[in-house]
Length: 371
Image (cartoon, rainbow, N blue to C red; front, side):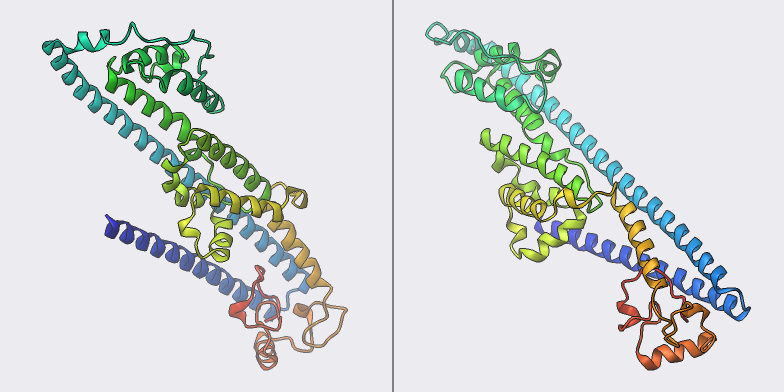
């Protein structure tokens, strides 16, 4: 089992690296094609302003395509989660059917041996249950902690026979919720299974249904933290938090953008339980309040940020002649692409943004207008 999990993790890592390589290769191909066309325009003595407008149009198209790709990736992630959820539900139905068959056989044997009647009658007359004052469970995740807290103290923890407890339990469930357990046999095993089904569905499902958040938008991260914190507190109240700690890694993977921060800041992140994970997420939300993020989403933020960078570049001096009255792409002193490349290479400047770093280390998302 451990070898299979290790192999799976290795393959997932390889797929992630392949995805990055494809994305990097695509960016290089686009950049290369763009430079070629730009060089042709320069050699054809196309007006510098027209070249700049052409570049802006190409940038806008690339941003639009990036937005579509991001939406598609999020859609695919959601479809994957739905498929996994459906698989879990089908597995649960199969387990219920299997248990029903097993319990039916056991119940038939008890009836034949005459044990069923004696077990039902034993100590029923001695039981002293309080009058039912527990409000029915309405079937919502928010109401589950309240209901189970009352029911477990008043009925479940008593020494009343499980069959009698099962009777009380079914009477205290909303009609829709009751359908999930009413098919179970009216026996001790049936009651045990009913409690397990209810705990799994309403005690843990809220964590499983936390949304996949593919952006670093602080507002969405804050909402994710609030939902996770509420779920963790509810499970702590029910003393069931230890049963879901194995899902920490799965939940962390729903925050791919800030997951890198957690991994980098805490080398022990793989040993986290939900308490430590929630605390780390709370610290992140404190460092990244929503008041400092007024944009609608990260895509809008990237677009405005790029426009700002473009405006900033327009106010810089020409890198070739230091004049301030024209863009580098309009410089007449060093006009040909070959001369510009030689100039940037001599000065050890970036071929993409003319900054003091290597082209391979350039963080600019715009394509070169200088060479």
